[in-house]
Amino acid sequence: MTRILVIEDEDMVRTTIKQILEKAGYDVDVAVNGKLGLEQQERNPADIVVTDIIMPEKDGVETTIEIRSRYPDTKIVAISGGGRVRNLSFLEHAKQMGADVILPKPFTREELLGAVTMSSEDR
Image 1 (cartoon, rainbow, N blue to C red):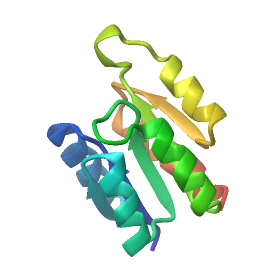
Image 2: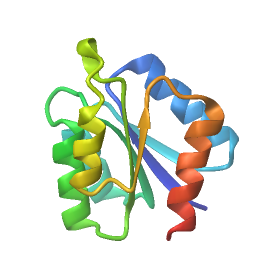
Image 3: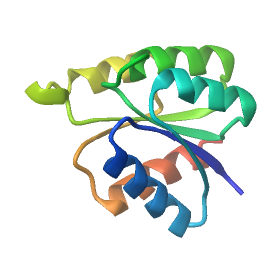
């Protein structure tokens, strides 16, 4: 079974993503920021990481760079609403730093599952 790690600081978004992915048959772990996400990845490596970009402690771009460096086979889906200013250039930067797929918020269930499926098919 494909293991997915969701790194997202917003409780409702994190819970919703987890529920969608679990209903689709994935094994899902969660973390509230990049620092804890990297610790979780160390303990129990995921096949796919879905990470928000704008987070406290360690942002999603830093997290993407570290995961890409330490776990080169792990697929990364970067998500972001662009913060208060809706600056979606953060997603493009994440793509340049190693994200396999980028997904702007808000996204639909189908868009999330499509991004994860694209990532798992590349494996």
